[in-house]
Image (tube, rainbow, N blue to C red; front, side, top):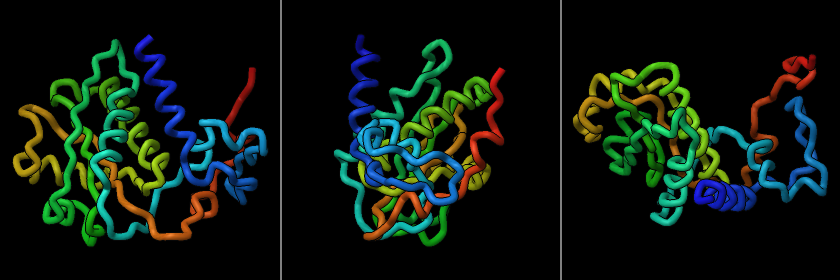
Length: 201
């Protein structure tokens, strides 16, 4: 019951996402959401995009708490919840991992115990990453998933970041404020048509 209630809360939060009332999806290859579907919580998933442009401005603690709670609610094999979240707000550190990052942007690093970094745990961390990424957008923030800096983080920044002993970073999510006028639907990358990637038997 507790997990069901949490899921309902998260779906309600996702329903607040900007761009949920879009009528067209351009060349993205995915059917447009009809008027009756525009208030459906799945709209945030259909309309999400990885922000390329951020602006200065702090992410509030209330926003951050909700984003982290969404990550913690992600499913995991045998409910092991193998992840640890490290919130990086120190601008000196964020700039070393992602150059020219905007003031106020934060990085949320998802890590797992080294001895458990198998396919199952990686998938669990990926699910938590996706939940964090979507929750930020549901709150009207920009978010983007990075894997490129992970090797550097694990080689150079574990101590500076205070990662738990024996843990290594798996992925990270950048979260920050968006410039005005960003259209999530038109800004999103194109997608393959469903009929080219789905098989029915």
